[in-house]
Length: 102
Image (cartoon, rainbow, N blue to C red; front, side):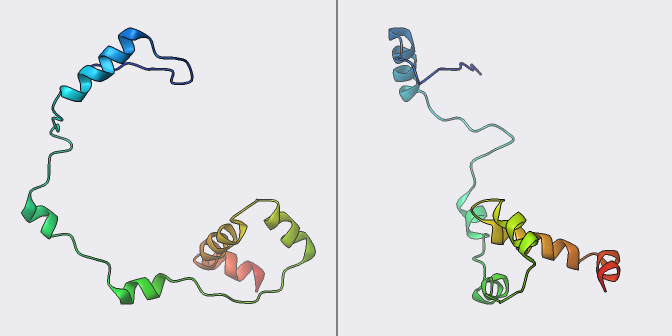
C-alpha cells in the first residue's frame, strides 16, 4: 500500500498527474477487512419498514421556554431544535434528572 498526500489547493506537478493517471489502470482490490459482498449477502439486507420509519418520525409540538433557555438554544445555531430534542431525550431517560425537577 502506498499513501501520498496531495495538496489540491496548488497546481499538480507532472509527477503527481502521471501517478494519478496510472492509478486509473490499477484494479480495486478489497482487503480482508472489507471484502466484496456476494449477491447472497446483499439480498440479506432488509429495508426499514414503514412502521419503524413512522415510529422515528419527529412530531411538532408547542413548548414554552424561558427567554434565557430560548436564547441559549438559539445561540447553538442552525439545527438547535434537533439539539434540544436530543437533550430532552437524554434527560427523560435519566430518572435522577426527572426526580430533580419534579
